[in-house]
Amino acid sequence: NGVDAAEARAQASADDVAAVRLGLQAELAADYFGLRSADRELGLLGRTVDAYATVLELAGNRYAGGIATEGEVAQARAQLENAKAQLA
Image (cartoon, rainbow, N blue to C red):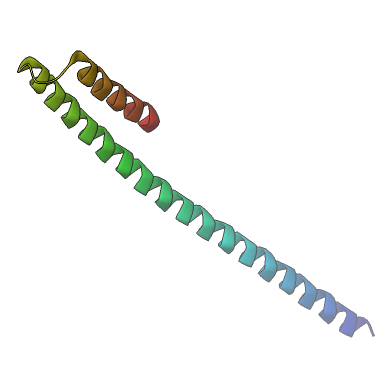
């Protein structure tokens, strides 16, 4: 009868809403974990830039002391610049 049909349509609509809600929750969770991963990667790149800056400073000091070559300083500078480019 008409009442049973209306109840069935209402139940189907409620099921549709629940399915959409579940899909949105899954998408939110995936986005959250993606953001957390990006945050960790950004932190790692920041620490890498800091480390390469220290290496460049050390290479410059070694060059000034006559125990490193210009090539070593240039390599350290290139590594730092590459890391900075990845961070940008």
